[in-house]
Image 1 (spheres, rainbow, N blue to C red):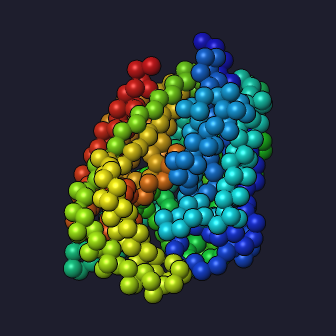
Image 2: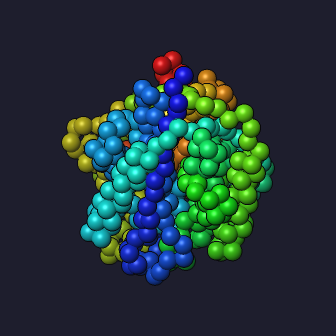
Length: 439
């Protein structure tokens, strides 16, 4: 077996002060400062016949067209096939605005995203040109940063709160790479929790708890590059939350768990077989109403939307429903009604370890089900990867309504996903995992 080569690179990607922030619709102005910096970190892998790049970013996420642009830049810089470039996002709500459902991005945001895309490609180039033979291994350690946030109410509905009986993923998984001389190179770590220790009154850029974990890991393991890939955290919030002190506490606990995993490593492997696979398909949508119904719905939401006078932060729920109604009517009028929401899933696997990129806010139960049924010994479902479609609630949770079901569920042409879309997503995930395993 050939040596496995790996290299790491990175860059600081903190936006300018004043840049609009993402994650909370209630914010009414741009960033006022920087609490801690945002970074992009890249890992290059080469088994002698296949190359791949994993890029982890302290950002909310990217839409599919933005991901495609980064992949093109990485391919041009490194020669790695665009289909072998895996983009992960921490989903910090203390970062810049990356996309909008309501209006075109401001010039400042578009300029920032373009520059950051080049920084990602530069980090990938740095990783590729510094690649050396490595040994590697995996580990898991108990960790619970968050709690299920779908809190049941007396009337049977759900609000964002605390559900101590709800599902969580109570561990951190780590994949460790070290040079032949024993020096640390990189660690990929995954845990499922939103980047929402800081809430909507925060106007300082921050990588949230995940960034604190990264700082601790890199401080304790001199020379290592730490790459955080979030899990399926669509219904998981940090708990408790609301301050930088809590972000630091959670990050310290997470970083310590990763360090414990790394320090307990044994039986490191030399070499390894790298495999990459993609699977494109559609998630089912709710039926399109008639054109007359679409016209009535748009008329229903328009007065409230007009009262906002372009100040979307005053009531983003109204904006969301208004623009969805507008999209439905435009689709009906065009005569081109989509059959589903286009989706791409990606797997990067090393021997019996697989990362699967899921481009949305996926519920933790779905991630656990995918990992359990996967043909790989260890599967890391990575939410917020390679795209940002919105929430995919489980069929079991749909009757309980709530934000993830009624307001922010993934949609296309103004139509929400069908209630059983999580089943289709799981089937698609297992399909691409099987494709990778069969290579």
